Length: 508
Image 1 (cartoon, rainbow, N blue to C red):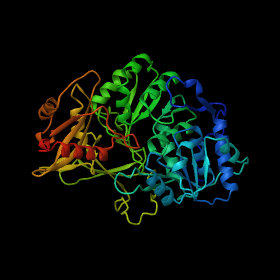
Image 2 (spheres, rainbow, N blue to C red):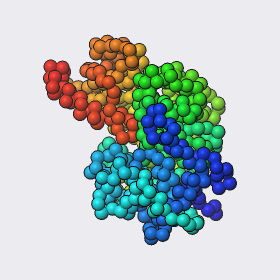
Image 3 (cartoon, one colour):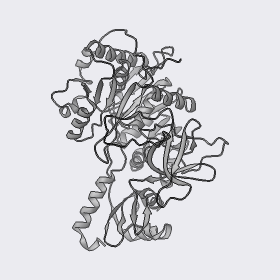
Image 4 (tube, rainbow, N blue to C red):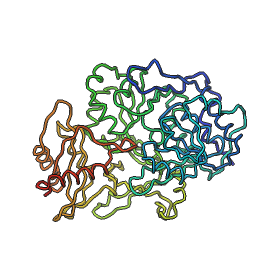
């Protein structure tokens, strides 16, 4: 019987301890001299001190410890330390409103919150806390060498909360065993030992946390921004010659608007850009290749519940089509559940792998999203081509029916973003007395380009079925982002309703 490894022990004790593990930046363009570099020995020391402090204070196996902070090196080391002690790390979305943060802390049963000073006011008074960015954190850590907790098959390492777009956020329980499988599988496919990764997405989100784990396990160097801003991201790539980027499409779209900065910064170091967490359009891919001419773009797919290991290269060596997320990974079972309006090769993706979540934390009110044979039901609609490649169509929850026709906003957005003047498009439904709902669009134009609403509508009519064309087109400077850096569709729905109520003559 193989002894399971603790997920907190990602750092290889046999590798060079003086290798730079993490470079923590302050996020301000032009102030890279204030960056703090941490060796693997230093990260390991912080993680050990956190684990010893938690053990010395009497916390019990399985207790939940929350982290409420912007990205930082102590944040990552603290997550490792919590898991080493046999406790469950709960990264909390600090962009939630205070009431929702309080809900997550209460729902998780967090017995302690490790936080940064900027987030201190959001913590209820009755929960003990320690500030990561003060001398108190250094004093709180404890010297010692107690071995890491040895997890069992079902021991939970992490609990990540969903964004709460529908109902209250749900705590996704992730095991040591499942996450180690994910790290090992990714490392075999894409070793990062010789790469320099850049992380700017929030560590409370799987996109960033999974890359941090992979990078640490690969003994690579990672550059870490506290939060994403387009200017700081571009500056970090040039200053630290980053080679591996992971991002969601809106982050890249925001970068593309920084034309002056892009013209000044050398981005030739970038070799790989892994796009995930939201669909990427052909137009955006074209623009990415124009700026990062030497980079390979990976159109990836993953979920918090199912992990980032789902698709990969074709077993016969066929090249992955531009808009495809790939062919099912050989260690992952994938199925499609057709729904109303779906053809035989389209449906909701279900998947099964060792990296699946254990379930949701104390949510007996929710039906488990698994099929009878143990496949996780993602809620994401995919299409499969004749060669077995998969293509993301849209969230089933985002789909709406207009005059009896199913409309997936993502498909309409990809079409609109092919217009030469359009940088980003977001499509949402509004009520309609005749058709039930109808599509409207928010458009961000490319810098220096112009188009009016009628031109966008005519382009849609010429390039897609008539029922998909947006009945209203509104131009905006930027699209609102949710806390995961995805487009905030709920805010756009509210904005569309508001605009129509103020301008009723254009409501039809």
